[in-house]
Image (cartoon, rainbow, N blue to C red):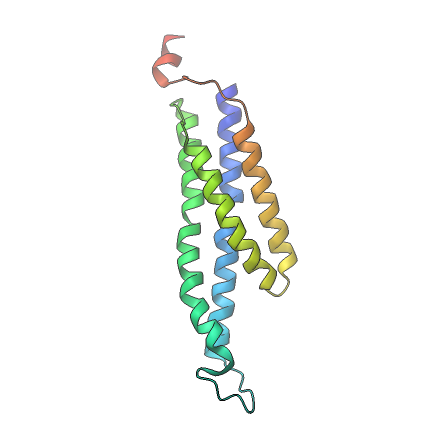
Length: 150
């Protein structure tokens, strides 16, 4: 019963962590649109004009999107390991630390998005679910061999 509960929590945390790359995807698409449709500002003689920040932001958001895709993969691996009865080890701890770092950057990106409040709320919920998943008590040393013996 305990392994089943842990597996469910890791699965929920994995599904909730999809919001982190989702924020970066939304920010990437918005920055790319602003680069493709520049607004000409009169008397702005700076190189690149008003879209230079977006030109720089596109590859940064692209890399953040790729890095954010690692979070659901880590939670999925932890869920599969818990489901099969193997020891999970420090995989949830690694996942939550990386998700916390990702949330710091994603929350700043979400606040800059139009209608960013739902994205920010999703990020907070994702972080709380990840913390809850790590806090679920699990039995140490429960391997597949130990389960077959019992």
